[in-house]
Length: 473
Image (cartoon, rainbow, N blue to C red):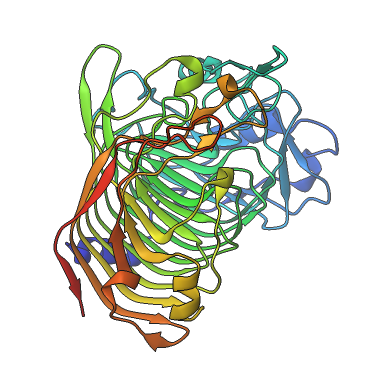
């Protein structure tokens, strides 16, 4: 693993060329309560490279996202609330020139660069795209939707709630951009990803709070590299930090390798950490490899599970589509260092059972687990049927609240075979006591088909995990 290029990110600032010169402070008198502020902000950003928004005693309303062009800096008072108006979609800030990487690979040259966003409380963003967003690419993404039908014949979106939707976006969205910084802000009670980076490099995302967000906190799509994600706290409804090199068509703006990402100083309230590799096959037959390699996670507290696995679209069974990677995906050269978990959790998002603190269902090589601290005793851990690392695919039935098996879906690739090789364990403790026992630290399993499905669930399969070299120090 090449650690130095990752560690060098700590000394970079990101967005260093943004907002040169003095800031233009928008006067508080320019804003009025219950009046859309989009025109005022658009005019200010068009005329100044560095714009400051003062404290306001009322929410600042938007009917379209704030667009940041190359070289732009936007600073918001940390206690000023920004809110998207009803019916206007949820992307609140984005770079000026987005790229739709769902239909073709991202170009090598980035569209926008040298941008900085800091401050503010960004809240109550809802699904969809603002009809006033000027980008045809954004409107195309916003029209994308998977329609399912519930047991009563009502249309539902993928989350199972009534209504339409569209591709999942980020409250803060940077697509095909480089050298940008997002820092010192709060995402509060929004419907989807807090920050979505799709095809970004040399970026910094830091000092953020997630106040009961409903989906991923920081969600990164490939191809992305040389990113620093640090000093995060709070609660999301899904993955706190997700590196999704491959992803479902509904959940990704782009696809490709993710490498040299440093994730550190994460303090979440029982959320997940996600690494999702694979291979993207576009509709025209072209393919893009989507590995994850040379990444470092350190000082992560209370993520109940790290999911290192490829996972097909959970709606495939319901839509008849084949939105999945045709390979297990590759993860290599990843170090998990100084990871602490105070309590165990037997089930996770979607009532999926949790059998390990690190679950692997991808082809993983050169993965190191160092200074891992589990708060319960080894005996309690064993009694819960847990391992530190478990290799092999899973089977889990998503019933969506229905009794009819026709409305159920399988969440995993139940026939997938994956291999984990050259795994290293160094200084693992349970309740402060060192543990070097292999059966506690790592194991692999094979699925079997459930002949009684759907009378009993899950349905099972033929997939299995294969263990290679294991080193316990």
